[in-house]
Image (cartoon, rainbow, N blue to C red; front, side, top):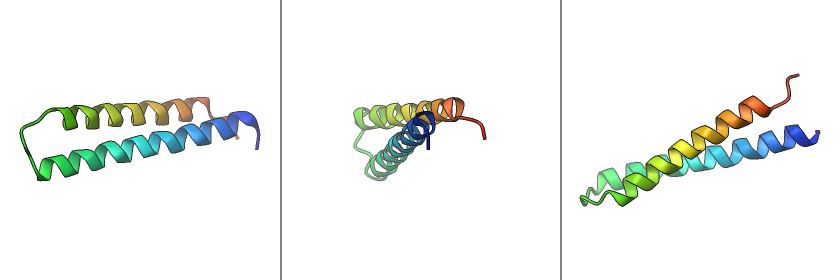
Length: 64
């Protein structure tokens, strides 16, 4: 496994983790809606970051 392939794989894992964390925060805060916007903002930021990292990993991954 070369360096580019390992970097793309680790970026993909971090992106997936951020994406799932954002979705989990969103689900947990919707069920106990307290009217605060901060958790929803954090969840949205994590989801967007996760999507961006997954796209970067897909673009920079070496083609087989």
